[in-house]
Image (tube, rainbow, N blue to C red):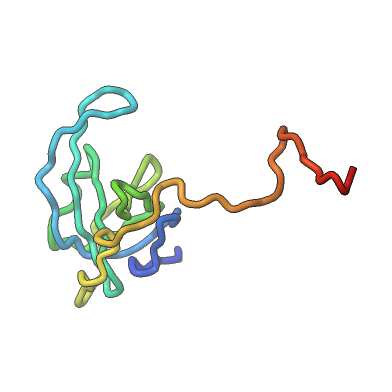
Length: 143
């Protein structure tokens, strides 16, 4: 049995996310250009929720017709990224989405993680000592 995450526990750094949620809403697909291969793709925005919270999720191309508003879904191996300062769940190349027969009762849309300002993509760097390749400076007392 794989570990199931709760939406309310997701962070901007969550990877390998597995969860069961309800599709609260789904936008009409729209055509967007890819910054990577300059081709056109279809994109649809979802709002998904469980009992702990809600988050926006993006579906691309062949995944769009797999789910509709009101469906209970199982998401496997997804990741959270920051898009325009907000958290967003993505499947990426290795993620998977499918209809689930699990029952979900009331969902919590009040705790919408995508409505809260999040950290920038890069975040803060943690200092881990001197960087390689840089000159080490010593105080005059040490010389």
